[in-house]
Length: 490
Image (cartoon, rainbow, N blue to C red):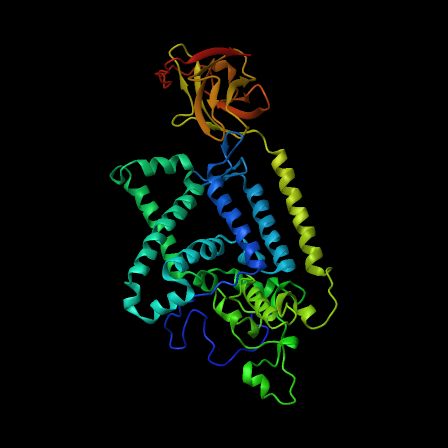
């Protein structure tokens, strides 16, 4: 399926460009039909959701937090780390398959109804623009003034309001990546105290203003890849916003219809209402186009005209190429069978892998520096570094034990080791054994880590020691540990 199902008029360029290459500003006139009212209700609900998600908590942690510097991703209270490669891969593939399935069934319903770009552009920034500049016609009059129009008082007021809204949207966007607490701290502090983070906030706010005040629908037509994906994601049976060419053609208006003679004209009166209301500036009568975001504004505008003329509505409607060609609707097809099957497979694998994941991730490493040292009393000291990542639903304290080293003394600065929910803590444990405990310079032990509730893990580890028990003692490399605890381990 191609991006344009029907030939278009010669001289066709991008909707946002004139034929000479200059910018063509799109000033759509909204069609307040039933689909628009439904979209407005959905958009208002989504804007509330977008604003609320960073502030919501689940199980003591954020509902959603994409912490890029720490490489931690929290989704619906579950934290994913870079080591969760399998889980992240399954989640990514599941999301892609969901997009494939929704597109195969309902076309670009995401773009027209739920995409944040569309929601904020069509139901926040453009309504403010129409209110200040006097509707779509008022905006076009200012456009006709050329450079002077950009400095008109109405447009300056609009830019100021858009700047405030852009800052609000930008800070909401940043909260998804740094958290509301960190963002609030940035806002309260002077920019001189945190120049780097202030520049990040200013940069994101400037990008939001540039997007919604200038780039606008070009984000959908030029930057977003979804329009190009539709050439492979859609087929003849996919639902899309389409013009019924068989019913509407040949089109004609006013006296053209009177002079048609014996020619039977279609229902389209060539009023261009569908073009005037399109937020991306296309003519839906030219067929399926990459720039169409399936917002149904053209359908509402056309239905209003048909109602005034006493003709049936639905000349532009949700349909498919199969239905427009007069064929019978068939829901089952390879895409609607394979996509759900794969989606169920990967989603099931993700849920299973998530359920099998331990409540803690423990890494056991050797100490930094010499593999071992000998104390003045002759005992061999090994430093064991233990890193614990708490994945449980709350704060935990982890008891560290060395198993399989009879007569050993374990010295630890903190035992048990407290770790907050979703956080990582690292400590060192020093194991002291007599030289006779080592065979050929090593001793196999097990490091046991338990929180006393839902997690207990055992990790094999090899302690290093002298090849024989006749090695002379060296100065101790074990640092003084305030409050360290020592206990023999059987």
